[in-house]
Image (cartoon, rainbow, N blue to C red; front, side, top):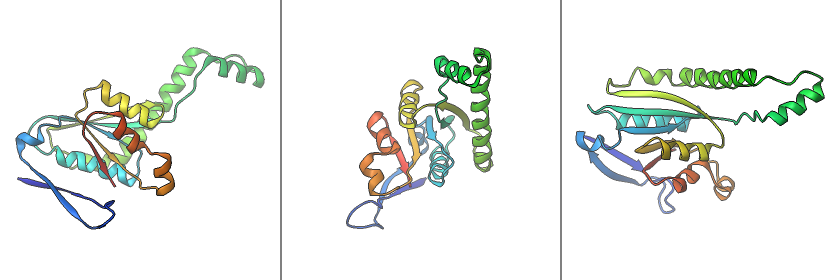
Length: 187
């Protein structure tokens, strides 16, 4: 039997209070079989991946999808047509644009694989880790991916960028509002 504890560090009265969440048995751990971990390489996202692996340590098959959201590649034909005309070069072929997009995403995939390589040694046999690269605004991509792919739980990092960031909104708070499923936010 494993115990899982969450620290309530944002509570205004106590920055050290700890709440016991619940004990996890094999059957309870099986409730999350498809976990999404948005990953940007930061320490909080690495801790979220570790938490996802730890809460999946049972005998049931689990898929952990590590989602890297890359900056959108705006391959709008009119934009490239204008740029090519201004540069005095022929219009870029659609096949070249497609190959460039594929190369861009493959470079991100290699980067994520390198960053999470250390986690693979501690992954039990029942866990399958997949890496997915998507382009767009992080909060939109994360919510859309979770809603479209039958995700049971999202484990994501929180950077804690302060009051200004909190006032403007953040990816984790947007995801909390944008999905109707459990979200584990790891600091």
